[in-house]
Length: 157
View 1 (cartoon, rainbow, N blue to C red):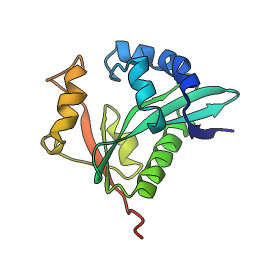
View 2: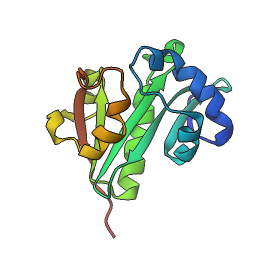
View 3: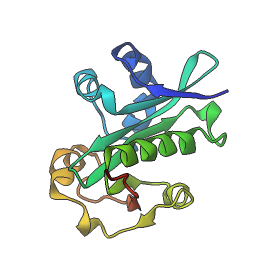
View 4: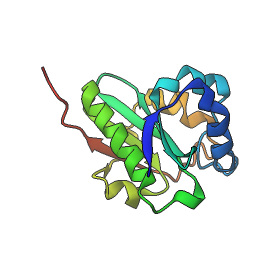
């Protein structure tokens, strides 16, 4: 059984170990332990059999826009709904917060399309995203990721 929960500071070493290979390959941006700690409240973990099997973060850019980033699932747990579960948890949280749209930059756009995201032009991505995150990428400025967005129906009142 897979359980979803918010990350704690004690989870950081296991989270960093899980993502190390994808960071090396340039699939996921590197984040220091301090950066992960600063943003620990944004991380959603998937646990099974007493270990972390995946995680992702819902990063808030503005009252209108959030981003799902650093989504990773352990290779032995892929194709079991773990990633989709993390995304659904992030979208639920975005809705509770009143966010209007959730952005994702990804190499697996079909996965996100199946979850209700639709492709947008990279030119529409907020500049703060480019200059705070994308510039750290080994592929910058020749990015071949797709940009997609999910429109949330925020709860009002």
